[in-house]
Image 1: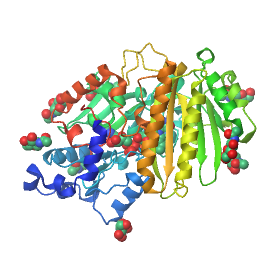
Image 2 (image 1 turned 30 degrees about the vertical axis):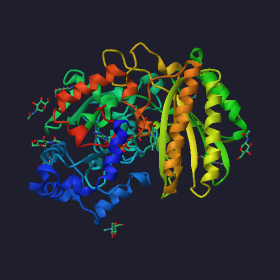
Image 3 (image 1 turned 135 degrees about the horizontal axis):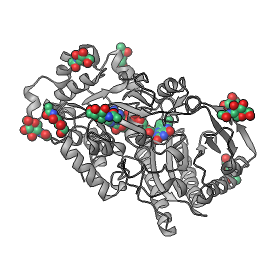
Length: 500
Ligand SMILES: Cc1cc2nc3c(=O)[nH]c(=O)nc-3n(C[C@H](O)[C@H](O)[C@H](O)COP(=O)(O)OP(=O)(O)OC[C@H]3O[C@@H](n4cnc5c(N)ncnc54)[C@H](O)[C@@H]3O)c2cc1C
Ligand SMILES: *[C@@H]1O[C@H](CO)[C@@H](O)[C@H](O)[C@H]1NC(C)=O
Ligand SMILES: *[C@@H]1O[C@H](CO)[C@@H](O)[C@H](O)[C@H]1NC(C)=O
Ligand SMILES: *[C@@H]1O[C@H](CO)[C@@H](O)[C@H](O)[C@H]1NC(C)=O
Ligand SMILES: *[C@@H]1O[C@H](CO)[C@@H](O)[C@H](O)[C@H]1NC(C)=O
Ligand SMILES: *[C@@H]1O[C@H](CO)[C@@H](O)[C@H](O)[C@H]1NC(C)=O
Ligand SMILES: *[C@@H]1O[C@H](CO)[C@@H](O)[C@H](O)[C@H]1NC(C)=O
Ligand SMILES: *[C@@H]1O[C@H](CO)[C@@H](O)[C@H](O)[C@H]1NC(C)=O
Ligand SMILES: *[C@@H]1O[C@H](CO)[C@@H](O)[C@H](O)[C@H]1NC(C)=O
């Protein structure tokens, strides 16, 4: 059983009394009491408005777990103090929360333990000098775009404004300009991090450089990031938008994306995300053909095949700032929505997308018939994998610096949104089954890839292993060095963990 799965069972099944009274904690005041003594205005207990607002701001119902208290630090010094206190209460489990957009329960919140909600650390400061924007770890992408775009600059960031900087960046991060500029994590110039011994350090290319590399893809395994210094670059508005298509266009769209992924037509300025959807309540299959190009007046030759697919139901293609696209692409979430997702990666072939589509479609129809009242919306997304950084600036994702995954690799994300909690187990079996079937076909076709993208992964998937043994061992070594007591393995139980 992968450790992430084990952790999930532990956090959900073991009653609170086991965490809160075991071992040395019994002789101390409760961790929440200690926290509220030193940060009285920043600790929130059940029943209060501050607690309720924090919990209801998680995007999906299944992540709205109920911690014993929520602490909202404002400064790195406060995070350091919190870590010092939680280190004394080492049988208390805690969670680190950024934008709250990961769908896996227990990743950014915890039942009965302590949740550190980072969202009050949301300053975005570009005053120091123009090449870097200093972003508080609890900021949301919409805010970061607003600040940099006022200066005629841009950054690599999330494509939905409400997504958090903290989770997206530490897990990798795919952005509009990623085919040319790489993963969002590789645009980090410096992480300010609170370690388990409560010291605040900078991790960058010249200082704590192994930690710097590990954090890029290793997420919450090494410390609590309190600030990201992100590289800015001059960039005006970009070209792009969404073309809505009916399922009559499915075959043409799959063919056009297959051609787009032919390495010989690679255009580093073009970025495409195709989303196929099945809304069971509406009995409707449709697709969203999203594309962007960083040169509004440049040639769109690489995108021509995709632009030709029709008949188009709607077409919003225009020219706008990345931050504007991130604002309009906010998909409304029904109040009671639950969600699961899972991911894999394969290289393009003439047949793979048609096979993948068939697998997804038949699973979706079957689930729609079974759960007619669950308000199930089943979708999948295909897009390119960003290029690796040069070898001198390694990340944890495990690609060779000489590889060109941006040319021929396809990232696949399957997403179920639904309301009926009774459907959860079967939807989980199905979503993992879909990934399994795709991986098997990819293996037969000889196009299977090891890498799976953390930020789209089901908690059951082995993600850190998918980076390869060398990367996993490097991360384990970094964790031993920077977290010798194992706080981020034993107390921060949510997320993809390093222990086998
Ligand atoms: C609507 C939507 C749009 C999305 N768009 C994109 C996209 O364009 N590109 C893309 O790559 N991904 C995208 N994603 C996926 C996204 O990257 C993940 O959901 C990611 O987890 C979001 O980060 P968060 O801070 O909101 O998450 P959270 O759920 O708050 O955190 C996720 C994980 O990160 C850890 N973490 C958060 N902050 C810190 C910190 N400061 N220090 C240490 N660990 C931390 C948490 O402990 C948790 O395990 C999208 C997701 C959604 C729901
Ligand atoms: C917070 O939510 C709980 C449970 O839903 C409710 O009983 C309580 O009245 C709420 N408190 C406030 C201050 O909103
Ligand atoms: C919180 O951080 C501020 C700013 O550094 C500091 O003045 C204050 O003492 C801190 N409080 C605690 C308890 O860490
Ligand atoms: C907790 O801390 C105590 C005292 O320092 C130590 O003996 C014990 O091994 C720690 N437990 C864990 C799980 O780290
Ligand atoms: C790297 O960290 C060191 C030590 O804190 C710091 O002096 C330096 O400015 C940092 N470099 C960057 C690029 O932030
Ligand atoms: C499109 O979806 C409808 C159901 O909404 C189905 O009846 C039809 O066969 C589908 N057409 C194609 C071309 O897949
Ligand atoms: C693109 O061309 C139009 C008209 O030719 C011009 O007004 C505009 O400034 C150009 N945009 C960019 C980003 O070069
Ligand atoms: C097309 O998209 C625009 C912009 O998002 C929207 O205002 C309009 O309602 C859409 N039209 C249809 C028919 O969906
Ligand atoms: C905390 O750990 C870091 C990294 O190992 C180390 O450099 C630092 O000296 C430690 N700080 C204290 C106060 O022990």
